[in-house]
Amino acid sequence: MDQFHDIRPYNDDEVAGVLENLVETPDFIKTIIGFRFAKWPHWTRGVLNSLVKLVLKRETSKIQCVHDFQMKVADYMERMIKTTTTDVEYRGIEKLTKGEGYLFLSNHRDIAMDPAFVNYGLYLAGLDTVRIAIGDNLLRREFVSDLMRLNKSFIVKRSANGVREMMAAFGQLSSYITHSLTEDHSNIWIAQKEGRAKDGIDQTDPAIIKMFYMSQKKQKVAFPDAMKSLKIVPVSISYEYDPCAFDKANELQEKSTTGSYEKSEFEDIDSIKNGIVGFKGKVVVTFGDLIDHNCDTPEEMVEEIDRQIVANYAIHPSNEAALAMLNGEKSGDKAFSEYIDTCPEALRKTVLQMYANPLIQQQNRAQ
Image 1 (cartoon, rainbow, N blue to C red):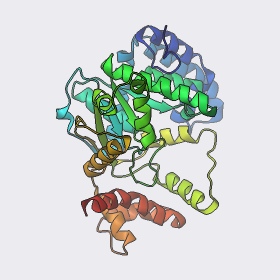
Image 2 (image 1 turned 180 degrees about the vertical axis):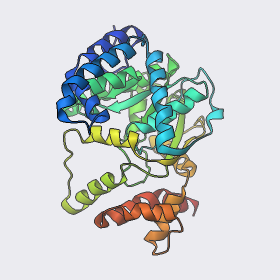
Image 3 (image 1 turned 180 degrees about the horizontal axis):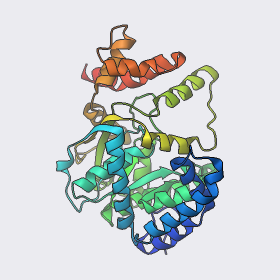
């Protein structure tokens, strides 16, 4: 019995059927047209609908397994990197061993691009790509769920109602992660806490560590041994420019002034799109050290993960310029000054704080 059938990525033998259904999904076709041909006159929609379906059928007929699908994604990544970044650098990837299943616990800046950049680095290094944890709050459209699961994503049931249902969901998730790492020897990517760190402060939620332990705790495995078996490697991802910075600042500003923020229905989908197509400048992905020493409590594990993520975060000129401007000094970075000039006046301090916080975190830990 497939106990993970409702959360796991699709298997190779499911790929062709899922793709056939996608091509026949009106919402999927409509989204592609809106994404690629937004400026075309409305009267062209009928013709575009037929053409897009025709092209998709031709392209998807060549995809017979998950690897084929990910090779297609790699093509798009190469194009995206050329058009939206000035450089992508990978650090520490040489420490990883092929065939091992690592749990990459990462800071979180961008919904889609964080795991995508990790995946691309592993692909370039000849290592296995990751199974990606993704919250069901992002899967309100069925075709989005299908696309994510084709790309080795598994579902985190954040919308579970009631304590019993939530505990069952976390227990299933914990078992799936442990099974993936120890039985399948597959890599896992998961964020260090729920949601993006919109304020630029990277901190691990202890509840994530406790969830990891749930399945092995039932088997009476000691906490330090359980953590070692998961092969946890902290990952720090830094973007010189965040394509969603102004939107994040707007959300933070509204929360601070009204106490709450209500997302529009497909706001997360727009964030995914903006993160993909927006300018990022230089991107640095740093793989930390495998945590193979004893951490006796979730709190000790959290401290070690946070220490590595903060220390390994690559500081860009944008971070230094933001901190200087917060302190009333000149930025010394013309590009960042021009960028801040495009930010609405009411959001500028919040945006500057967002960019400065990674550097402030490093300085505070160095004291």
